[in-house]
Length: 276
Image 1: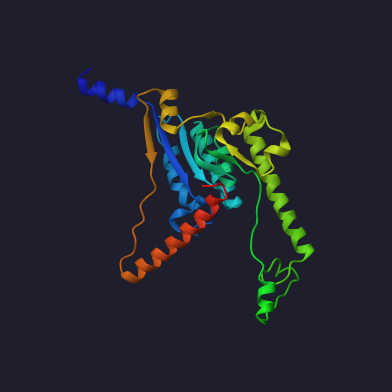
Image 2: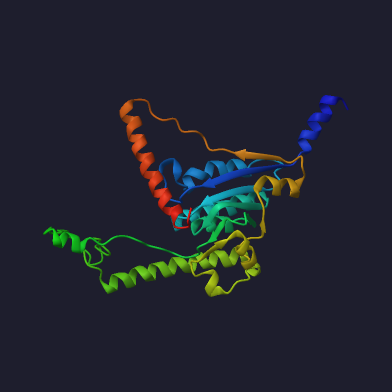
């Protein structure tokens, strides 16, 4: 066998692990521009990663404070579907935070790793807003809304809260929370070691404590862990999203800048809940 043939043979035998980075707030498609995570925005990377031949596993780096429960579920299910077809394990690596929907994504992997100082958990549901009814009353402003259907104005911020509306919202949250708990129990199973009420209270912990609670499987950084597991010659291949080119012209660029600033503010608000 010639030298070139030996090199080509060695390359064909070399282990490969594709890596996909999921970073940002989980939101409905396009609502946070380039900063948001949705099934539509991440599916091309996931499909490419799981289609790599000779892949020993697919690694997913997660840095997300959560967001949309629907998009979290859709992305998580897509990860499982692709993993089943490719018949490869999925390893999740949590960076600064994998909380709420971010932890939902992590739990979609077969194994979860984190930094000792990572923020992990927040298995709960939250809804927040403001009430302006007293402010507009003080200003002498009338709120005029006409509906067909008595529940169409539920939790309108310009109307006083009503007990039945709060009860309806809490029922919706409880239903979503049950779905979240079911997903974690199904994916983590007997690895969970904390008390049920503690794990699913919405609390969050460091990676070190999450390991003790069974929310993650180990402590470690992505590249180092992959090389230790699959060999020093493993090709750790990052699958990057396609770049989106900004439209030309000053008005378009100004509009893009305003949108980016607004998206950044929303993202920072999500991350700040975890002290980040």
